[in-house]
Length: 391
Image 1 (cartoon, one colour):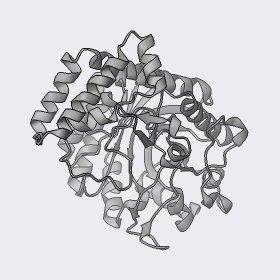
Image 2 (cartoon, rainbow, N blue to C red; image 1 turned 90 degrees about the vertical axis):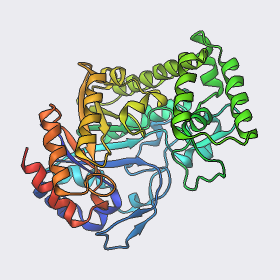
Image 3 (tube, rainbow, N blue to C red; image 1 turned 45 degrees about the horizontal axis):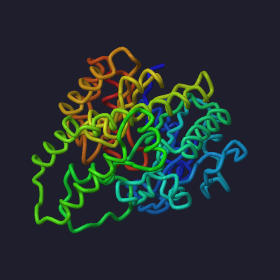
């Protein structure tokens, strides 16, 4: 079956009703609802919301009924909506449309605050509480258990897994604030994890992780003590130089990819065998920047089976450029899906949506999804109806 999915949140489906949502999205041309099963937080504007226009979800909860006996030290927190509605059960029992579980794994501030020792630790010993570390055994156990639990408890077609890796320092907290001009060099240095598990793993791989941590700390200290603000192009060049000529930095970043790939392989081995596993590789734009998070696209495609790339771009031309790059990186290692947004700030006209869908089809990428059901104004659904009918 060609994957034509609409991403959705549980609260939007509860508000409109399972039957009405299924009928609506099928009429537009979708055959799958990719439903958030584990999610972080946000402030969401809902143009068609009938129970209010702004929604604040509970941070770091799950939207399926977990079997807590399956989990180790870190256990998921069920969302309060489950008191009245199990939307995964309601959708799968209703039939007529496939249900895919969207699992945000290691981006979880609620659990990071409860278990700070399981989070990313930067070169200064600061804990990034929104990011559980994929080197940490308890965080890995949670990630695997979440994926196994949801596929065992519900007849979902598969999983779309987000944030299985190392989050960057500028992603994820609700009110990030500083009076230093941000740049890629500084942001990337501050986001590197030097927790005890990363240090031990890197040392076992022959990397001088303690020396690298001291180097990163000294560089950031020097920069913050100076009166310099790096222009964007200079910061990009300096970060690239550090990764290529900085001795241990390149080896450390490559080693991080093995950590994330091995976690994904554990998940694939643990979940229901007939459940598809797709990896949403990165918060970076374009997708090629995913390597910072420990994402080797070819290796992850081989481990999971599918890369589901976020082609979040403001034009069809940029979507197709990113898709070309993802295809060459993945090669024959696995399948490719694409996620797009049919609205501001991305594909903001009927012509752009249609060109992106048809262009991906011509490029051999027919499995596509759109984010997100609750965020769209009516015109976006009309654009999607036309674009999907064209392929």
